[in-house]
Amino acid sequence: MYALPNMDLWKGRTDSLIDKDEFRIHQIVKDNRTTSVNNTCGIIGFSCEEGVRRNKGRLGSKEAPNEIRKSLSSLSWHGQSADSLVDFGNVICENQKLEAAQAELGSHVEKILSKNLFPVILGGGHETFYGHYLGIRSSVGPNAKIGILNIDAHFDLRSYEDITSSGTMFKQILDNDHQAGYLPIGIQRYGNTKKLFDTATTLGCSWILEEELVDENSEENENKILNFINQHDYIILTLCMDVINASEAPGVSAPSSFGLSGKMVRQLIRKITSHTKTISFDICEVNPSLDCDNRTVKLAANLINEVFMCVERR
Ligand SMILES: N=CN[C@@H](CCC(=O)O)C(=O)O
Image 1 (cartoon, rainbow, N blue to C red):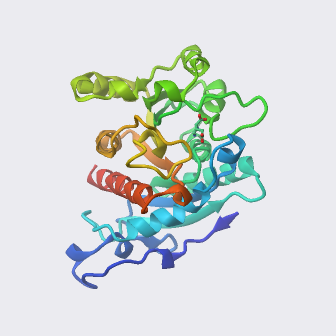
Image 2: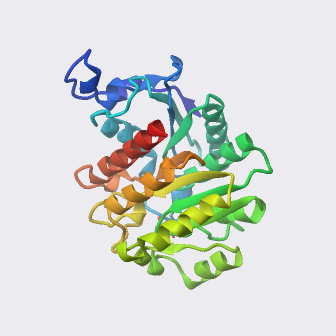
Image 3: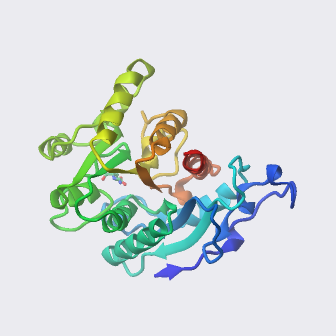
């Protein structure tokens, strides 16, 4: 099901009604039915936790898209255009019909790209990514090489023989799309079974462990990411918030005790979304019902704002 944008969610402190240098994001975002040449990012929500339910995770992520919008609202706007951001509303997963909802999300992602906008998708569980991917594949055609960069504690390469879920998307894609490559960044050694590491190897993937993401290795890690980008025509970026340390991101289904810092994730996002091959972004697994003082939702909003800034500056 699709819900038109609810512009009442975009509310916050107003320092000035006319001076654009005093604007906050709630004064920048427009309903997608009023477009301008200065639009850069198209926001679409995926209100869904069916994949998390099937993966036996903790429910609550379907509330994230609107909670993230509320948190984004008050951030001050440092972009160049006062018409940069456009809200395309939410796709809602109903009656546990995950596959139909993912297909519907894909068609909205495709629509946003066709308007020359950079899709910013607010998940939902990480099953959001499969819908994101469907829209991108359909937009770029079957022959383009799509590189998937996943900032995540988990491989999400589980078997989907019985059912698809928030833990199966990348295997679903890699088994069927031989023009897609996959590089997960921030993998927790003990958050994934040995079998999942073997699955990644069998599928020809490499990965960057969380414990490898330290300053001393920064050049090596950057080169690994850049080499991956160079091997593909388009890059799509997905961020699973459970990659971030549980103290900074408690509001997720599977918190990470040794997760990355928010600042490290910010650095990765800046690098990747500043690259012109990167054509879309999603953020997943924020669970407002498990959050503490809105910490995870706020961090998600700040990271999304980094994407807005990097895309506008390209
Ligand atoms: N997308 C997350 N997938 C992880 C986490 C599962 C959970 O919610 O506990 C996984 O399948 O291992």
